[in-house]
Image (cartoon, rainbow, N blue to C red):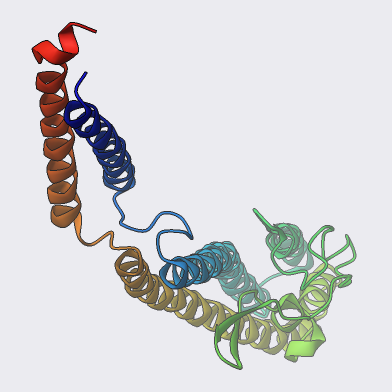
Length: 293
């Protein structure tokens, strides 16, 4: 082999290696859809990419929490809606029982119906969602109301951050809906009404009308709060989702993922260069001076 041919071959081999590496890198970036996929590609861009990724993970978690909270409040809101219907029925029974045309037997029948409504209301007050008992405050692992109607939960709020220093409640207050903390002990009011009907106590029945009406109003107030809370949580999730889209776009730009056309061009150019260098090498190896070796 002549020295010039040998030198040319060595040069081509080095060029082939460089082109092969270039093709490998271009293929890797094109497959990943980004120009920067490792710290060595661009340390600053990669660090920003990782930081934005952590932000996206945090935002995604907050969206999931907000939507889960809205779902739990939805369970509470529906239970409260049913509770208002029961209390409306209880008031109607109280009004019926206050009529002087009824006798003791008639009122005893009404008393049994009020007791049945109370039992149904207790089930609603102990409603469960995916995260536990929705009216228990932060004691979601156990029913907040016992058989006597005593409240065993707490009125602690479960909150989700909305923005810097701002949060919103994501659970309904069972204490304010059903206990004296809201103004009236709803179960005690129904017990008193059932007792007055059963004992044919006309004055007690008439007093029970006002107590049941007040119970209805306080349950409605908590229901309204729950409905507003659902809308707030959904809005929070939507706002964070929109912000996440912006962060994701910025993150794509950090690593050049928005330059897919350029990545394809680079891959094509690298492939062409590698193919051409291999062809030149093949031709050189076919020279007579090399073939004789």
